[in-house]
Length: 122
Image (cartoon, rainbow, N blue to C red; front, side, top):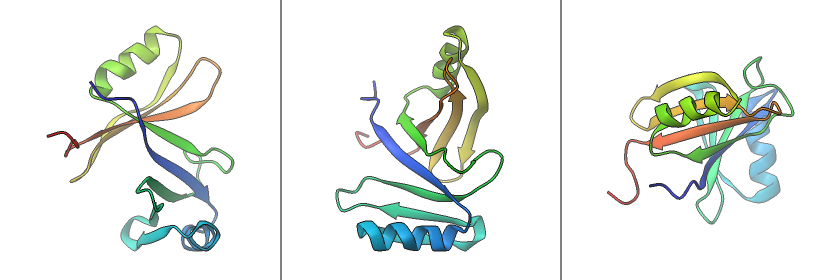
């Protein structure tokens, strides 16, 4: 069973590259811009990280999205519904990396789930 760690944090920005530069300059994070996805990965010195994503209806400004480690996204998303939450993004593959899903809790807070194709303890 996963430890349910926070494994990824996404920060929406009006301009992905300049948003990444802002956080890189402010915190000293390493950045890797992926132009084909208009997405910038960031990594802190302790190897935690996430991404800078473009502001959109799915990623509105002011909604930083935290992803929690999941061993079984399908089961977790079923439990979200059983517990009064709402699934807003079904399990989706990130080619070569893993799978993610997004839900809202009963209060309306959005959170993500992530399962790696390459678990740390395998």
